[in-house]
Image (tube, rainbow, N blue to C red; front, side):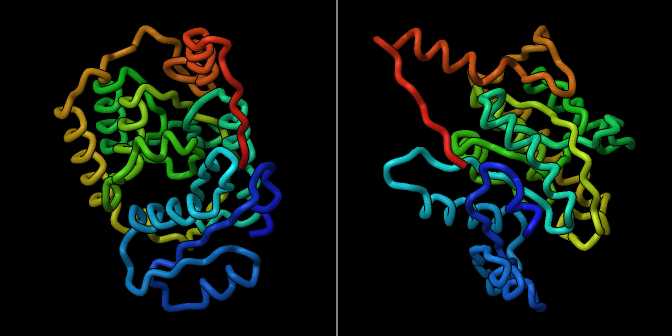
Length: 251
């Protein structure tokens, strides 16, 4: 919690206690977080949806909605590395920033490779880490991704939905360390996680719409906004508007 508070722009911490049987909620509340409890375990997708709704209720009536930062609960002091994700969204580089290891090494194995290929087939984007959970999104991107896919398909489906909505994404190097305390990511049942991700991605592939054009000709790579910086969309909107207008961002 202390590390999260040290991230510039973070002014609200929300912890969704998804049916835990320990002192998770009490400890988080004592550290200054807003705690919402599910009486029974509902899964990550439901927990994130609950958190997003709570954030919306606490937005300032006279201001734009907060961006949403999603972090695993096992990052410890390394959570401050999410600063790079927040900065990418605040600077209007992208609508969704996705964390990748600072080493830049891709996930290995059959499952990630299949998900990676399917995401590229659907959107034109080559995603090095298709199952990365640590993300920062604008509220527009969050809304585009809802309702969230269940179980372990959340990340793959979220990426496709955001790109299909005409928004931009980018992978950002972050030096996170995991304690292994977060079991919601399916590390104990990796085959099931991969199956869910592939199933969700295949479903997205075969449910096309007018916005799902492949854009493989755009520049790609870690640290490169795809298909283009979010700020370029702002400039286009301003050009189409008489006099344009300013948009103020808050965290």
